[in-house]
Length: 273
Image 1 (cartoon, rainbow, N blue to C red):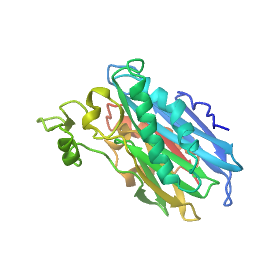
Image 2 (image 1 turned 45 degrees about the horizontal axis):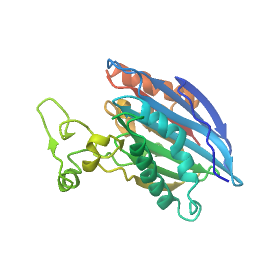
Image 3 (image 1 turned 90 degrees about the horizontal axis):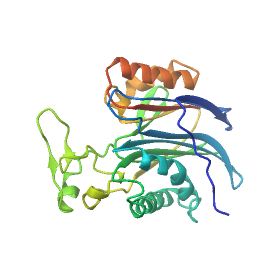
């Protein structure tokens, strides 16, 4: 039977909990519209579900650009596509990568219904509270804390870092004074879902990492670049670790990003183990 996922919603904040051998796993999320003159373009998923005899924690931040159609599509379909892969349990990493690519192809085939926009993504799947799989395309980031030490679980896909791949595909990277590096002078990330006009020069394959959750693991933070532009990994962990309630922690991270004058949409999920 195909896995059907209820969407996570666009609420500004919320919380929930699951179970593990070490006790309950709690999460909280907060989404705050940035100061840019466009509607909120971020979507999220944060929930626990039962699937084939296991409890899965599903967490994601989808940071859209040029509209919210693509992140809305990802919210509805990406986790379903991952869990519908036949070899998910045997090879989660390969299944996640295949589903990312398959989802991107579906987005491109739905054009122009979904428009010319795109989205970054960071996703986390927590299996029975013990095994964590994190994947991303773009600059939304996942950071794990072990004994208070920040461990980045994702790779920021920046145009300058992947210049060779972009140029090999016939594109270029612009570095204008006072601006960030951009693919073809347009997009500030080198991997993304959608972006049909740039797709020949972009990648959509994710970086995938995993970790075992043990007694030393404190929490996981998933957030859009609206947070990471103004805060280091360790600063975010230091703030979140002091607050036992993950909902309050997620809200405090968003407040701190605003205080530091982040202009972008700020979306954050905190999972406390």
